[in-house]
Image 1 (cartoon, rainbow, N blue to C red):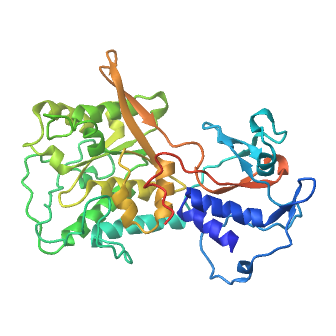
Image 2 (image 1 turned 90 degrees about the vertical axis):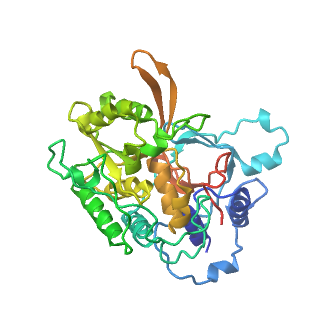
Length: 422
């Protein structure tokens, strides 16, 4: 039972709360006892829960947690992590802390750096496919089967019925301006002055647009990065007198920063923006030249694809599905998503919350802008990439067969609302 509970926590919760962590530690304490020399040995006591028959579970298991080797478990407190390598430095043994009144003057001989190393834990193929299916269901059906909440999530209030006037259709007809083998016009609205029609009463247009988009992504050459253009464009734009449109220069700074990196020669970037950001009523004249470069063939923009998403549909659905469709593929590079959006509305609508949180941890890149660089003629772009390890409950193997361990991360400031105990 303990193995099952820890495995479920590892998959669904990631970061347990303090009360949950203490409950886990109490179970391990009940599995061990100390003799007169302070050695930890196996307990002869067994829990009645170990005789409960549980239905089989799918997914990873944390492995055996009961003591069968006669040595028992040692609990370490105050462990530290090398953020670059994931190397774990063991803290002090729990029974040393309890028996020592002057903790600061004692150096534990068992403190070892690098004996254990936290690993990056990726999603399984089944988890990737489940998230693709759920995102697709949210788009085409407005909900996920089994999701009965009357709220939309993300602080957006109650769900609204989808009617004939909940958005606008768009015309995706246009030429492939870069002359690539794939049909880029499937995802780009080229006629900036086109007047979109009102939505038809049925939603077949939504299904058609989504199928066309997924086909476009599947036929597109490999890409490494998707950018939530609106999130970048509206960043720090909530000051008094701010324009209604996104900051197109700010988006371009980020695009150029990525494309001009020495290691980005084989990179291809997908930039997603809703069609309203290209409306002549909203688009400032000075931004036309920026958009022309995005759609042009001049280096380095020849490694950029601009995707204009249709009215009546959330642009977040598109860049997320692009990342999910190409993510987890053996023949494709890992796809990173650049956005500061914590995607809480997606988190609450997707039932596979643990998978979604792990995807964010491994694939979301946060951004910021520093001071203005006169030489580059733009603000410095600051990117926060995912760590080299997964911050979650996980089983660790020691060096050279020196035994294994279970790492349980403690919650910290900023975890509220991100890692939920249920």
